[in-house]
Image: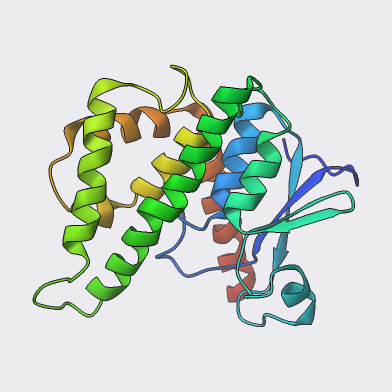
Length: 217
């Protein structure tokens, strides 16, 4: 769906990243949402190694993704996903109560789960004898395990952006390896088996792989 009409959505990511983050850079969340909803989009890129004034004007922390939609621009993957979700009922229910529930779970994935899992991961990089954040993360994962034992989807018995966000937060192998959460594993595997995820993931890998060839030239 990477057409080039000027009025199209543009998802901005880095022109290149090292091997480790590939498949996990958060522009994937936006690509995935567009693929699920059939929204036309293109990919723009900014330099990974020289984050200049133009990039900082769009994303003040020099991160990706950011999104442009005509004269609208947004940064932070959560904000961008909320914007995309308003474009398709496939992503966000229109019924008021269900929309509110979907919004709650999107923000919960970011603020109650990822806000714990990312610091836990960073602390773990130093290989401490005990990670002081592990109990906190396990407690959050236990809540999700109980919930996902009782339901297949977060909202209204069907896929929404809430599932997209939560699955993307939980899918890194360093998080999945922390303990035994069978219902959560089934949930993540089912959502990541969706064709839209497979395409978004493959496209991101291909984007960064093409950059390898340019850097080698």
